[in-house]
Image 1: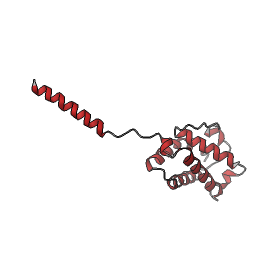
Image 2: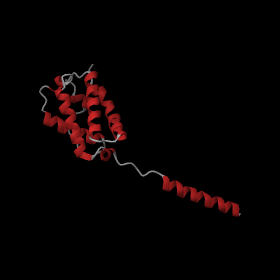
Image 3: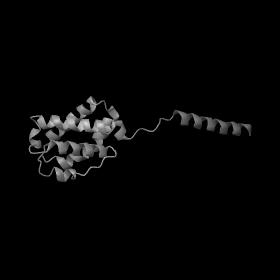
Image 4: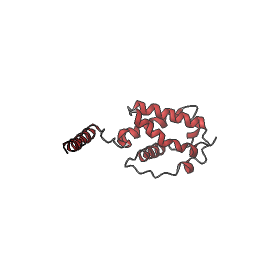
Length: 143
């Protein structure tokens, strides 16, 4: 009987130790990215760079950049489970006539990755955001 009681005590002790050593829950992606201020800055700098890059600038001809920056920031915030409301079109609709190539898309992703690094976003949060954005490629790339 004492052996059984000792086993129960040991089980409780192990459970308590495991509870103490468990990692705290991770902050939501939106918070890991730095909230709206950092998301806005990343969107702004990414679009500033790709809209002036000779390899991608043709895609921004005639685009109202202040509106686009605001829209992209809201979209990134929404994708990251933040409190922002994205009121733009679907990616397929908004890029239907843009004729963006796979190479142009890859350049934008690369620039966004650099801007996330520049903003000090942790590697895991950066990779999670880019993972969530990856499915948009099929809606954006035309060739």
